[in-house]
Image (cartoon, rainbow, N blue to C red; front, side, top):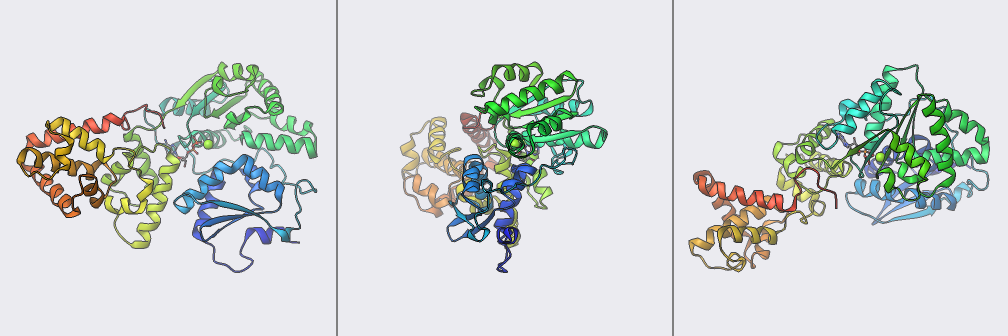
Length: 462
Ligand code: ADP
Ligand code: MG
């Protein structure tokens, strides 16, 4: 029985689907080293018509992955496939159903000294803005002088805002500058898995030894401690041992300590001893800077206009924004076309949602600002008092919503798309000649943008 050959693919000489590679890369980035080796290396994903099929060695893997990693799998999958796609699990019968319960032995825990940090996640690749400057500065300070300041450092923030990036950046920095220190990065899942393995196979003592000898412990996503009593207990003792000997601890979570359900009080208070630093969703300038940095990393040329357009989307999860870029890079490369806003709209279509600013929103605000009725804008009357605001509305719909010309026409009282095209063109020309109109349109645009608050710093991801 050759489990690896079966599950790693290539046995049937099938060409690897680029989406599979993308999926594996994303999953690898999302799931930390040891854990990935344990649960995903022996599994294999393939795309099949309208679904993805995940082949796993046995049902134990299936359940374990579904229980713990389903959201990550879904995320990696929809990023790779460019949209959500159902996944079906399939047990690989040729593996003989060998598994955990029957004596399958997951990959040995790596020695903790091994560099296990993601090499792409460095301070130099992290874009700093108002949204993340405290967390960034605190991580840097701690990485310069581990154990001296801010201990523990507790970083919290929503999904895709850079927690794992910062944690790895700190790890990379410490490892580069203090090679004598033993630094270990672990997700809470890793930590739990290792604990389970230790209890089953090697004895808890080895586990304790390994963790309590560290100089720096970087523990990611501790919200997953919720309800895991045994893990909390072990972490509590590890924490105390490390803390008392002045060793650095950095943890991340998507919630503040007191918001993590079923977190023992004694652990919570320990997390609160140090510095709590938050990561907020990036404001539009930071989003633009992040997009441009990521685009250049991908060798994708992204005009200012397109970066602003993408940054104006309500999406603030940087991982999702990166997913957009991956898709744009693939399609524009394939088509050999320059990336314009139109092309971006076509490529991302349903992903750049119009829940941001809708045609109705534009009509309402334009009507109020020009002192006409929404029904006038939708109507056909050709007097100047209504035709100019109507064209302004068309122009702003095109600029601020993701609707196409035909759709705008339809939503504006069933107009032909060529009418909308002409209206937009006319206003564009007038804006160049008429500063008063330009100022007015700018005010309306500002109102519309601010109304949703999407471009204001500090808004919360819905
Ligand atoms: P989290 O752990 O908070 O869910 P990650 O650290 O995994 O988020 O970040 C998701 C992706 O977004 C990563 O590829 C990361 O490099 C990127 N990212 C997030 N914030 C920034 C930033 N400020 N600058 C550069 N990249 C960022
Ligand atoms: Mg993370």
